[in-house]
Picture 1 (tube, rainbow, N blue to C red):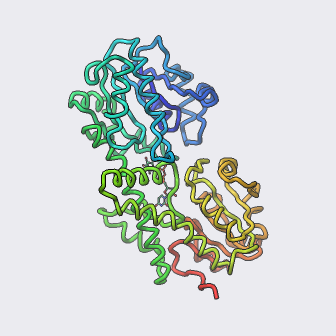
Picture 2 (picture 1 turned 90 degrees about the vertical axis):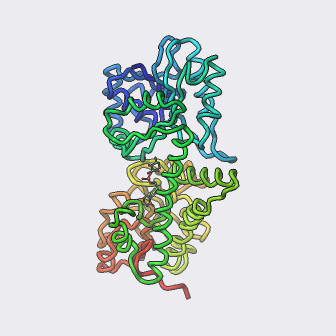
Picture 3 (picture 1 turned 135 degrees about the horizontal axis):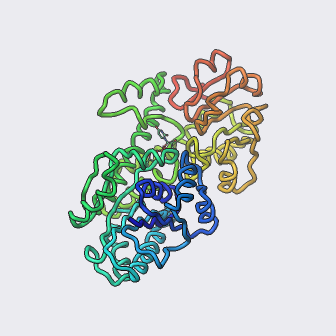
Length: 442
Ligand code: UDX
């Protein structure tokens, strides 16, 4: 088949590689010239393990062609809309989805065939029917389910695992009005040997929100239990390990920490909460998941304040700026509320991250002090505050911290280090959900 992918973000690129791997001829449409040029040279404009190698191979073998717009002289049997749906001031910003829909419609105007049009972007339930289909009909002059077939096909990709989640997904969900369209769409994923759920578009769109909301719920549950665990003198990680061994619960996504960040969980849970309010069925669970996450930053800052006996004038090393390891993505990173809180409480902050510093500086108005190395970041510091569980931080040795820091105090926002090893070396260790909390300030 000839497949057109609209959007060169990490969903679009992963999807393009999936179809190219299936032997199809793929056109990846990325309107941003800088990103398009990078992609055309076989390099992704973001960090994602394994992507560049595949991208270069598929571009060189002419299986993947990058363009700034849909090539008029090519007919496609499938279009896949993978454009971004960022959070806007009044909820989700669907402008890119609307534009892509119109572009597909206009392109269809010049071509025959009855292609599938997949919507992969995360959108509120109802978007395919109410926003995408009408725009394609208007711009193409065709009728849905006759001149083209629209399918909701939400993605479940994790940053840092985009290829794994694309080539070995736990399940695929396809939502379309007609069963024949569902079956036709499902055939695209047959070789993946995983469950393929065939349903209607609205249900498919809802699945994505409900899945992310549940994963975020697990994290906020672990974070709330962490506060209680520390108060009663137990280690929440030991608790959650035993809790998670029940297959009905599962051990994943129960890691208490500084809270969830990223371009999905915060946006999707806010989107679900907003949808529930619009439907006059407010979701107290979604609201609580967000409230716990928002307050987790202050909980970590209070730990830090008590650990170091007041933050005014203290030198704090903030270690890890990306929203999670192995990415330079700082969207909704919890490092931002921590950085701002430290500054508001009068601390002098030096930050360190292996790759995300420039992106983080763009988020923060004032000039940040960034250390060139972990050692320089903690040298002379009164406190090391960990926000991302980078492997370089994991390999910090207790003796080094003791030697380099002015006061060897660690607040571990991601439970990255071994508490006992640090305590044995005389480092004061406090972590989210650790069994010991700093004494309340006098
Ligand atoms: C998530 C979902 O996992 C993915 O299925 C969906 O398609 C998009 O959103 P992503 O945002 O890339 O993926 O990252 P993820 O690995 O899920 O982590 C999200 C945030 O949760 C990170 O800030 C991470 O630090 C935090 N997290 C994750 C926890 O605090 N505790 C955990 O146990 C797991």
